[in-house]
Length: 212
Image (cartoon, rainbow, N blue to C red; front, side):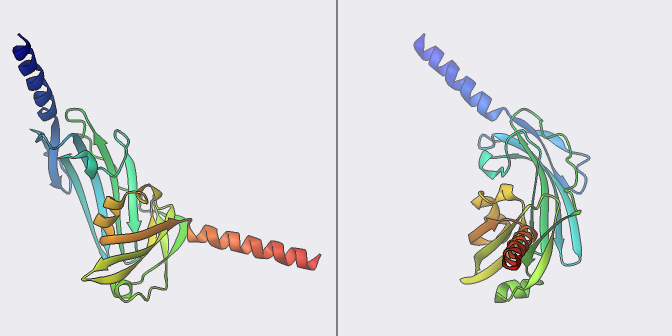
């Protein structure tokens, strides 16, 4: 009897782990997504709407898939926008990860492309990034609420990385590595425009005290 009960419980656990169903597709519209059984290693459904800018080229993709929890850079069940903007290249995503059958059927909105008034130091080109000679200014867009700076590694050489980032990515090393490159040593900070305003305020207060 105990053996039968143990077998039933084991089967139930395995069945539950393997029974998640998600919508699956990858193209510009995902009008024809299909519901599929996920493998045991996939415990969440994911839907992502992505826009990638490289120079003058713009591409948009919708991706619905079975996924692992580790691959989700956003909280479960919460539609979240995240973005990295290096000036010469920008990658932005609206993403939802969820844990019930076919919960990723919806197609999310395109990430906000509007400038948000913040600015950060950045690179004018990938060549400047590789050479470490970046001196441009990047206008932040959408969810990009912080500046970032640091280095990644490419062909055993350090590559300078500067620009705007959404702060919800700053503590996600795996996501930053997939977006910027291997071995990231990235620090996030306040928007540059805010830093400039603070510096001007401090200067004004010092000048005022000197005058009076």
